Length: 427
Image 1 (cartoon, rainbow, N blue to C red):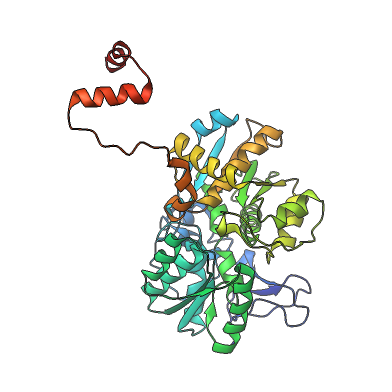
Image 2 (cartoon, one colour):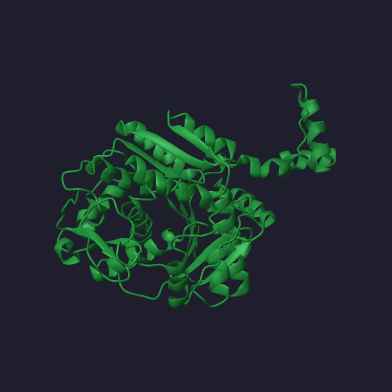
């Protein structure tokens, strides 16, 4: 069934054909992906700085430019996460104007996927789906399960069998039906495409994908608003399927068109793990052709070997004067530790990728110290603690007696200090 809406509808990226609103992700004629197009003039008078500031402190303050059905009343306070000035990390890597967009604290499941799922499920209800699901590398599974429970929808989640235990638990606890697949994400996603048609279920990243992807724009809206209604010079974004980096750019373009921010060049930098880097490989080779890879990295949330938005992401990055880099598993762990030790932000492996890539971009001179740069952290480190297990095996697990003398002796042993040095430090 096709649901009409005066503000937005589906449009083919290639042939430009319009499809109204329905659970459809690809053009039947040319097989190109569908995206949401808006009547920007129709929202010009209501999508203003004043109207946004008067709205709720979550993504629904931007509802006029999100594909949500008429009459939908959102009540889940998703998004509007902190934009943190990273002074300590900046000093370490040579950055004077570095900011962290911290979706590690996004409500309700501690990742940016909460944004996209909330928009997708609003449409799932409108289209009459009673069962929803997804193919996932972890964070999306958590978010679909949690939000489906809140909305009273049944959830069936398909994941690769080797997913991190914490992400499995964070899906099962919401009562979702979880199916492990003997294969990688690309195998899982192909199966979900078949299931969506056969069972008439709403899969957020299959037949609901155009609506789901638009939720990512809210990251871009928030960055601009939190910077005092200005655009940054650079944005560093982790890439799995390649959608997030493109949608942040779309958000910036819409803000410029509507006069909410002044136009300026913004460069976009993509970040991937070396063990699964099809988009960064294409960018480095100066092409938009994506050669699928077999994932082999601890950054499972980014481990999509054949990314759906990969060609478009590579084209956009190159066209905007940006770049893409990938880092090893060792560098990923170091990035997690560095962000935690300098800024008190505990991120998952995807955030380790972004942090290490950001540091490399400064070292390469691709980003200069005084430019306003935003590094996007998309998930919480509590979900991937297994990636750090070997890093802290050396930590002393002894327990000392509850006596000051024992504590003093223990500190001297740990720090290699003398009694006089310890007394001076205490004073």
